[in-house]
Length: 424
Ligand SMILES: Cc1cc2nc3c(=O)[nH]c(=O)nc-3n(C[C@H](O)[C@H](O)[C@H](O)COP(=O)(O)OP(=O)(O)OC[C@H]3O[C@@H](n4cnc5c(N)ncnc54)[C@H](O)[C@@H]3O)c2cc1C
Image (cartoon, rainbow, N blue to C red):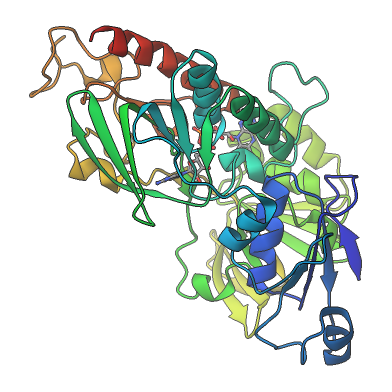
């Protein structure tokens, strides 16, 4: 019944008590896992257990899930903002104006915050959810320089957070940048709660958001058996289960290795003929050598079924068109992502066809900067077509889509921020 966050060996800071398949409880677990906060998930299976363990009327009491903190605080069905407040992480911007505002706290944004703040810039970093971005859903990053045994995404993010904080960067969590206005040497970012951030330069490091399957009832099962990303917080709760992973990229491959020690069967569903086309060789070999991982090639998920939570999926053989049903409570969708940069259109920032922000040399046509570019020089390497507004990491057109390159671009973008500021 009780499981600890396997990522963390210290005593649980938060006990989460809820019913099986609860989307709200999943959101809390996912958030705490990404922040590397130790927690204990206590799943109630009956009305009696809910009464006894959570002190509520029964399994379907709307006060579930209940969170208990070591100081005795009890939160009933809390949202992420309430949890952040309880952890003492909620803050408002302390300054009326900054040198640098960064949007997105994945590796690119965190790195920009470390370099910006350590080099004396008044720096603020805004993150819509939890620190770490995509790395937060990664059980182990094995190719990041300096960690020969690999490092979990949440640990990497927490270390970067501490580092940025130590240098004095202000970090605002659980609030989203929704709109922007840029005039020469001044950017105004508006957050979803109405907070306004004024800064001389801005870095957009908003990465990509997971692509969806495109099935009609996806929202119904979100967090209730259907998850986006590699589900780093969920492996320990899949004992004895059949787990489906949709996608054939490295993130799907890593997820399958992460679930294999716990689940009975891990089934990877891919559209291609083999994993070799999309997966690193070392992962292909590990997957083939792991007995309880199966690969369904040339197959796709075409329907989701269930009531309160996901119970079954339909998979289709793309060669024959034949469909069959498979029982499962756990489907993890790892089919890549797309940038959400609609705000950029409104302010005239140039995007490519897929919505990625175009920067530096990619903006030039026959060696000339785009129309309305106001300066004598051409845009710096990571600069958009608005002077002083930069893009770093996965959100950038032609970026490499790796942790190390995102962190590198974060650092580089700060070097260009200095050059821009020195222009006066
Ligand atoms: C499961 C998985 C496994 C991976 N494994 C590896 C690996 O082993 N090695 C490797 O090198 N790479 C790996 N990657 C890729 C790597 O994680 C990404 O390339 C990297 O995280 C990109 O960093 P980023 O900072 O550009 O963007 P992201 O990590 O996408 O971070 C962007 C952040 O911006 C936030 N955001 C978005 N919009 C807003 C807004 N409007 N306001 C405020 N915040 C916003 C998001 O919430 C997010 O936190 C993996 C990715 C996944 C999904």
